[in-house]
Length: 139
Length: 141
Image (tube, rainbow over all chains, first blue to last red; front, side, top):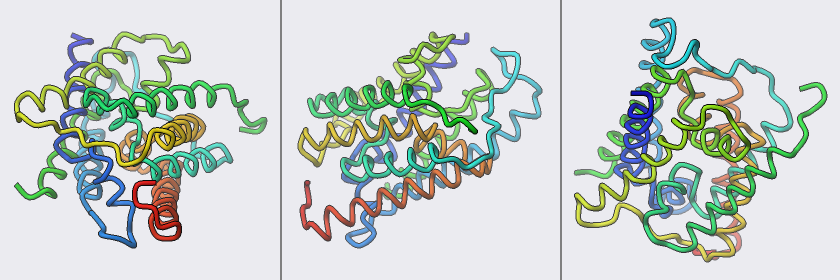
């Protein structure tokens, strides 16, 4: 049951990315290109996803506990720190270069483009390196 | 169907996936968090691996049904793909999230950190495209 639910969630996520055009880097870069032929599709994806999640989360949290765990694991940090700012900026630059964020990058692997494998391999290397950056002392 | 309607429906499906993951595992549907924790030895790997299998399989299954691939071609050369991948990996790990974890799940629960992160990565992405396409004048980098 637990693994079946996870598979369904993964399939829904991947289907959502494909249908919405997010597995096309040209569409993503079109959204980021505000001074060019701006493509608003990413905005509609975010609107649909954020509104659905906002309503759904509130409904789910009334249930007390998740089906396959003892408690909900929601990040409780509220502080802004350098890691968050630096990380978000580096991610945004990488996103703007090629038009891939992590979900679409992984979902595009079956497309058969060799350079997507290069990007995902380097992304995994980045995750590994990022995990080795020591946390701030006062974090 | 109009592209924006497809995008809205796709977004709703992503939202349903996020709600399902919260209802079942009690977890945020952050792709960078789910995938990177497999590299750094998180406990309870089983559902994370299966979730990613579903994420990878869905566009391929859709291609079989539609008869044409839903996956678009990369628009930059492979050295740029390598640089981009490294920045995306490092950035999402340091910043504790990506477009899904911060942009969808975090914004949906009005997390201050996620709202800031989302504003920053969208702004940085827009600035990067502006520099590449309009200042340097290279379309495909």
